[in-house]
Length: 444
Image (cartoon, rainbow, N blue to C red; front, side):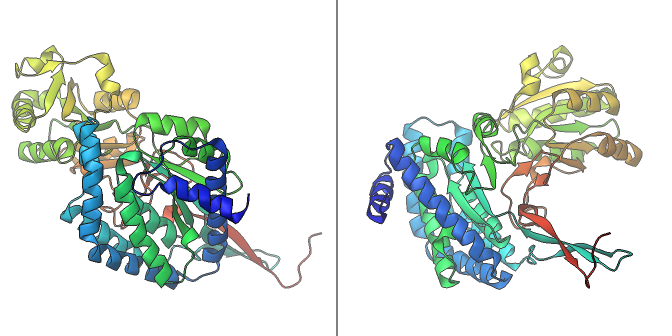
């Protein structure tokens, strides 16, 4: 392929006003290989730059987003109109929608990530050997990260910021629903790169909605991509996990639980449960199951279900739950393993903390769980026994977010036990190497 052929394929993919839905296999390969090559070159460049360049790029990108709010909102309006015409569910529309406040939050995240200490080049550990060797474990970038996501345009900004802060090049493949929103945000990121004299290959966006590009990214780019991060629903994550030929970082389901213990303060429980479920129902930290101790069911459950139903949430439960409120609908076995991402919650009455733990161990996805109680030993027992990436005491599960953890932003929540677990921020997008300094030692 000549440079002219490559540019022609990329221009066709960009498609002027509308992205091309289908390209030939050769065109896909041409586009993706060129993106991969540029990303690998940029990763080498980033590995040899100090953190000040990445910091400057992010501050400039944030300034560009502030100056282009109207353009981003117009792009998002096009995406929203298409999504509504296609009949996307309310949860997906909520994820897709941008407004002044959400753009301001993205800008703050860029500034916060830029202001964080450089996670690269940190001496994580150091020690001396009896033979005089000095050994250090030093943080380094992962290299090139591929992010595949669905209808969240904010991921474009968050992923770019976190990958860049950790010295990584990133290839962004957003969903067709957020095509124009992501494009507008990406253009602001490019302004930041150019201002800091960082190659544009450091943050690239796949310029086609053709799904074949995802398949090529997963199976044919091992020479370019070091890690893939999926950000979306179960079907996307399952496909990425199944087809990727490089390591995958992420989670499959967010089956999040709140357990209200017998010694929970009622008013605290009401605030936490309502917020955990209804603040935003379409995020992975939204509660999907409420467990309540039988000891406080009579005093707590009527108020909790009334709050939820009053806020527009459908409550499902067994006969013992329905006895407290006739508006509660029957629960099925499949409900305990369903991530609704909608205004629906399943409720179960349990016999104390150990049965709550047993339920979570059986049905949970090791994402986020919270206990509401004034009994410290019970809380510590719950926190110690639950094997999830995030466990909480007297707090809403909606705090399961890298920004709320002080990471500036997150690429997602990882439920893996290898490399990174919980919110994936800039520090989690590094690896390490061993640096050994000697004075002429040889091994016998």
